[in-house]
Length: 295
Image 1 (cartoon, rainbow, N blue to C red):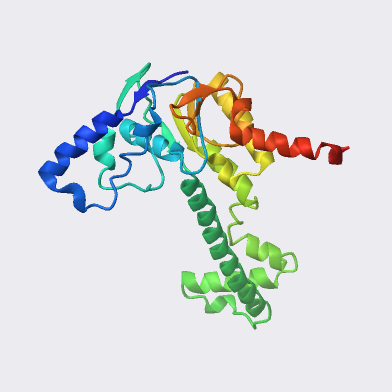
Image 2: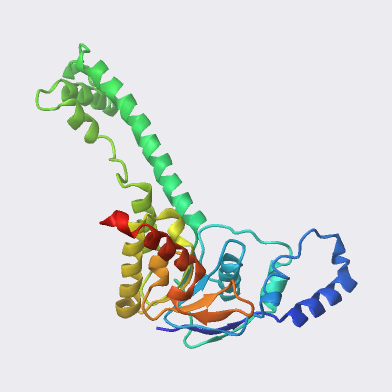
């Protein structure tokens, strides 16, 4: 499914003309940076045409994450975290143009590494709080277990009853420490590794029939989980009506069959096959050199 059909950035000349006019009106020379002006003009970036799966690839600093953020901002996609934007970001986005094949659904989203890391940290914080409460409850269990308890005829309020019930539960032969605690405390929300939690975050963030932008998802995923994400993307495109635009240098994601790949390290920027990319050749050459070690 294709929602976003084309996207155009301002040409180098258009960028320069805009800055000249704005500098004359507002004395913009005092700013340290005019980001993202000046990043893509020299790359002679063509009008971007999108397919079901479109990938931006390039070395660090190539602008692939910036490009995703520009597209997401122009299309007003949902995002869970803020991103690095300058005073000129909105001006630059205003100069961009796009064409839709179909109206972009409301639940369309950009998922970034920052969002993944925030999710993992949230899980840790919640689990740490549960663990602290569990320690307090262990102490409570021990105190109740060996207390003298209270007689039922001294119960004068619901608070008295609840205290008596806790003592009774703690002293019960059928109520072990673990049962006493588990009956009163939520289990940790996940026992997964950070990578598994990150993969779950990607899966949970992507809804049926939406445009999904993924910014370097491999940053938080093992090789095995990158493969799992690859299979998930294939299914989401074929069966769930999703369109993906991905910035990555993961060979697993770059190998997605039928993906349209833009190499941002080229000038002018152009499309290529995944096995022509420099970052993939590095992997190939390394494993080729050590081929005998694999038996």
